[in-house]
Amino acid sequence: MNNAGMDAAPQSQPHVVIVGGGFGGLSAAQALRKAPVRITVIDRNAHHLFQPLLYQVATAALSSSDIAEPIRAILRRQKNAEVLMGEVTGVDKARREVMLRDHAPIPYDHLIIATGARHSYFGRDDWERFAPGLKTLEDARAIRNKLLLAFEGAELEDDPARRQALLTFVVVGGGPTGVEMAGSIAELAYSALPSEYRHFDSRSARIILIQSSNKILQSFPDDLIEKALRDLKRLGVEVRTGEKVDCIDETGVRMKSGEKIASRSVFWAAGVTASAAGRWLEADTDRAGRVWVEPDLSLRDHPEIFVIGDTAHIRDQDLPGIAPVAKQQGHYVAQQIEQLIQGQPALPHFQYRDQGQLATIGRAAAIADFGRLHFDGRLGWILWLIAHIYFLIGFENRLSVMIQWGWSYFTYRRGARLITLQENPEPPS
Image 1: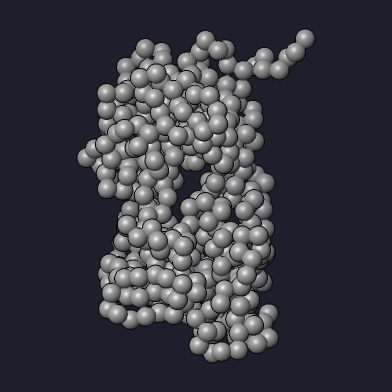
Image 2: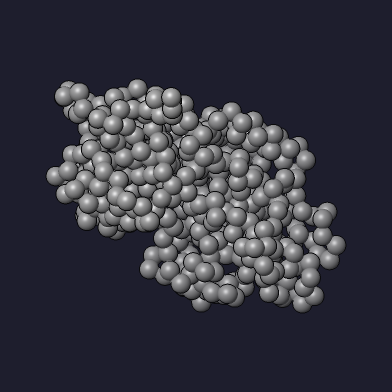
């Protein structure tokens, strides 16, 4: 007798399809583990990624496997859930089907769209070639290659001007990602690498952080912004606020003022745009491509479709694009679906419970905003570390990251400095 699938959810049960295995989608799937439903999670990569630590992969502090885990492994004990690796191309709302490339349509009774966001170049997509953004593991590995190859190129370069261009790193965007990346590059150049190269001093590197508005970390209180600026300057990062980029090409960055910054390593952290979900759903979207949803996170006139996380914009609310928002929304829509299935009254409108915000600047330096309570420096860094370890999926991931961070903290060395030449076969010139 074939026992395969005996514990799976009966085919007669309502089918919940979740598109996206990030914080929101995974939270929804796990919250439905005891519900009388069948769940199909569709993701183009089939792994859950802890995006807040992507910059540490990009700057060689962590390995890819430290911050990612297969969705199948995470849900392996959840018998009512299956995982499909596939690329969604559209949604047929009339037939209630999700369209996949190279696969038959997937029918649904309830649909959750949790497909996140990508970096936005504000209409200058031609800049992406020269200033990669950071949203996926592929992005992080490409940036790591670009970063490390710049140092390798400097070792081979005899011309002082060309060498300085290789050693000038520009981060565009002063939000948490940009600040964290700039601080981590500075630590790499000024603390981890000085003893490793023979023909130049890595401490001659310039790390420039450019923010178009007058403040970095704009969602944080002013006192914490000042402390973050202090820590960035202590690390050696040049912070330039109120300055706008006019052009990015293979030679570097040209500012609106006309100033030219010669650089072979420009990284983009200035903006995001939502996934293609608005196009799939033929729905109204905001300027960032986020789908306008009702206060219960459903699509107008389609109570069976929910849109959450960075893909959604609730009418009359503008929530930050952070993991806690997506996780809370995933849990909420799971409860809402259970109420609908059981014929119970709908839940009250979604309300985000603000759990505070954190950003790390460098080694033992971070800021934490918990409303009336503000922390910085070493204590802020400990709180940041605890929060990030807590949210990592799986004990093995937590243990690995703790070991890596401990090694880096006490030795100033980076343990993930592999250059994968298949992605970028030649040093920059």
